[in-house]
Image (cartoon, rainbow, N blue to C red):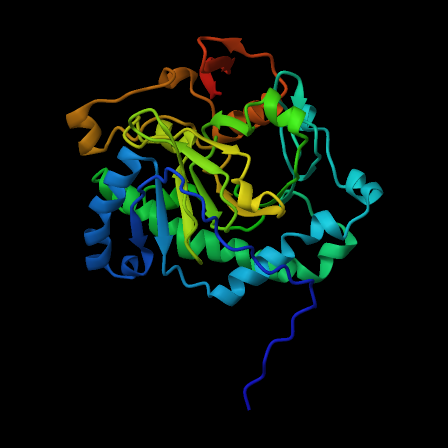
Length: 361
């Protein structure tokens, strides 16, 4: 007799239907990651992924080995830290972000400033830098660990191998600097976006999170139906990212751009108010933010024959380049709280550790 695993109960949140609004969608490539299980499949995919990450810095991944039922359950679990934990307990699992340079545990609402003095309405909970978690999350920790492991080994590792092949490097080049411990430098993050007043929407021109690039190597976003994510496409236009059931939205971050000598592109993206037919629904997010190991210095892999042919684009001289831990902590300490210098009507800048960081509004 086959035993069936019994999981703790969690309130189910049926996903809302996708928007019917006529939006300007980004035409992102769709990658069947199951092909990466063989050497021949990786050779086939390497050029597709290389071109996607050079052109857009974004792509979809499908056939990643996680079922639609597992997907739905992780989104139900993702609501637990927000709806089933008291405000008092949330404060116990928050930390001094400006001092620690970490988003472990809770990042409360109204911590960042979006624009014109308007605070954000984004609450998030991040695993696994900390050993202890709110009581309501305790029953679900084994599943969240399994979610982290699946993202790391079944999604991240194949993508890293394909990115290395795209640079004509040994395929494990990037895998070797991304340790697989679920409590290591990569993070599971659950996010909940709360509605804002019409006054705040007007002051921020409906922007919930300014245009930015992620600080890590690879971001894995589990697609969900409420449209709010936009990317800046190569022609300089903001376009919406379409929902695909049980697909992943993958993007390059700053650290991979630096490690690849600018060969791969950390793409600008933002979060805006959903279209009118979806504004009554809560928007939840489930993410895996991958970073290189903390001691990895963010300098280009100059052994790449591609870089030797095409040249290197550095954001900072190699001798001044930060480690992954230094870069992450510096960005976290200053994001959304530092004063920005306006460059023009769209771009604002700050300098972090000698590197220019741009925000787009």
